[in-house]
Structures are given as structure tokens and as C-alpha cells.
Length: 123
View 1 (spheres, helix red, strand yellow):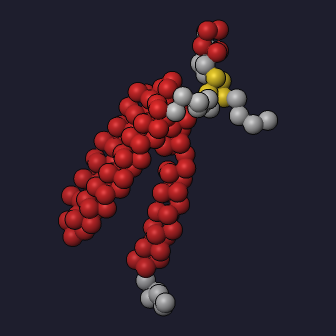
View 2: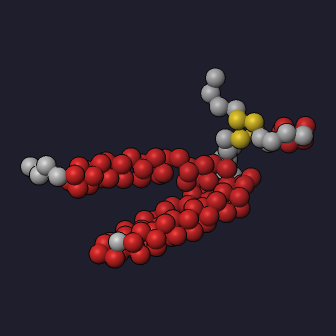
View 3: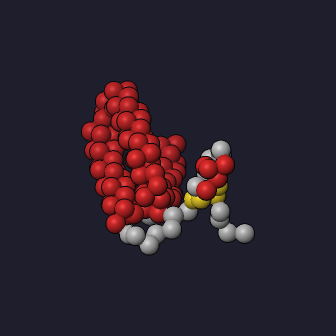
């Protein structure tokens, strides 16, 4: 495959690479957090998912208004990804609430001592 030496080709190449990295990072991090911690804070986690969806919609709408030539592509890609992402979160929350044996990743004992939660990760 030969690339023409144009700035737009380089930008498209970087967008393709960055998009894959972003999808992988999104899929292994945030839905997993909802799944593991749904029993303690699914409402809070889903609140921030909703904020992210609204923020995304605003930015995509602005991009579509600025670049009318590509507006359909912006809206189509964003709409598809928003649907996929929201479905992942809903499914993760459902699994987390249904699985009684999940321990979660957060320790809430410190709340009784006046603090927030304490991360008790490896090490």
C-alpha cells in the first residue's frame, strides 16, 4: 500500500492509530470498573458515563457544524460509538450487580474513619 505524501494522509494515519488505542483503553478500563464496583457505586459511575455522553455529543455537534462536508461521517461514527459504549457500560453494570461473589477493587472501611476510599492494589 502506497501513501501519497500529503499532510491529510499523515493525519488520517495518526487518527487511525489513536482510535484503536483509545478503544482498547476504554474497553479494558472503565466498563471493568463499573463491573467490579457496581454494588457500591453504580449510580455514581453511570452518572459520569452520562456526563461523558453529553460532552461527546456537544463536541461532535460542533465539529459537524464547522465541517458540514463531513458532518454525516462525524455523526454516524459518533452515534455508533456512543451506542456501543453505552451498551458496554449497561452490560458491565448488569453483570456487576448480578454477581454476588465480586469483591470489587475499593475498600470503603476508611469512610467510617472520616476519609474517602482507599485503593488496595497489588504491592
